[in-house]
Image (cartoon, rainbow, N blue to C red; front, side):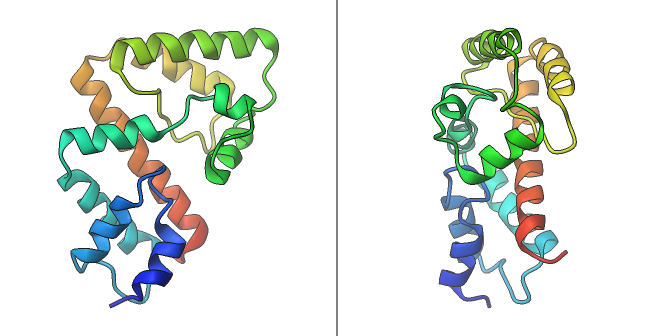
Length: 164
């Protein structure tokens, strides 16, 4: 069994502002040495998927808007800041920023949580295209898509801190 404190120090932020996912994975006995990104990801996704819809919705709602007010104010988590900057979202023109703001608002009103996409390897054009496409999803389809994207983000974050 892995050391709880060491595990939490490395992995409690993998699911945005939701350390309970790492805690539940550890408490289930699914975290063992040696820690690998694949095994930890599987254990954390198992804990996330076993949670109630409301608990998973809270994870979705913990994510920031893309290029939103937290980004502008410099208040993103370090992971979110790095991910959004990697996709160029910190270098938008005024018109592009206005488009993201409009889409963020529309999406939030429609689904009740922010638009979530694993931005690694994408640019602003890819993200805007996904935004426009996914807004047509049903509420259940988009909830499932957003949860899958949260799990993908978690995998990418784990791969950055743990061996595969």
